[in-house]
Image (cartoon, rainbow, N blue to C red):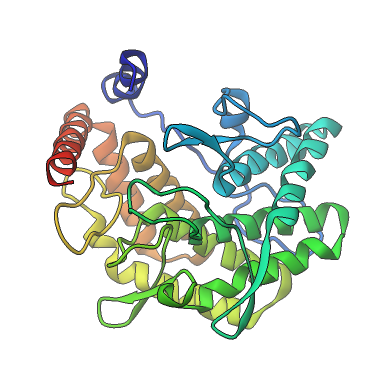
Length: 324
């Protein structure tokens, strides 16, 4: 990593104050059929801030991983959310057209196949995930959930049933275990999780789990699918039980590894955690989400806690290098 990139990552720990790097959009819930509602987490800043340095010739963003540029379904979804939010706000035809390009990419790159006796629609990662060690080909619960949310908005926008069919197929892996090609795992006495990346044992990445949950809930809001609602409620029960385990006492943890040390979230992901919990509180009314959002916001507002978070992150990365 270049010195400039390192300084850009470290600088906010010292000077960001109380301003979060992320925010909610309004309203949070109620993606009924035909409604044009922005994604509950605002992604507009990644459009206006030049977050994606490289695009293909069709205007699809490319992520950087393993030393090269690759198509990353979550990057495509994030870019799509930002475009849709800008279209809802300004009604610019270009934002609409560029959003539909991203939704079209998801449609044309969804692989429909049979897994564990179910017809599923998945997006394949064809490169290694260096954090979890997942080897290609693999799928992501976060990508599946975010893609559902993009496809439902495309369906609401243009009333093309292909988008709805693809969203429903994208939901199926949430009903299939990791070992059978899905994204579902169970832990802590049978609690359900949806995994951002497949690993053995699963590491329960918090933001990826919540993005999955939001996609499932939006599918229910859009279609009335009771299976989606049941899975959403099971996942909410899991979070109510395990959310305290993500609290480090001064910062939030990125995941819940079954061995080794917990990974302190970067400032970027700590802020994501705060806002995602705000979203879940508005969706469910569960006090625990408001409580931990407030607690983690208090951690974040203290420069001492931010520096503890930074120091813990540096130590964790050093441990990873030594043990890897």
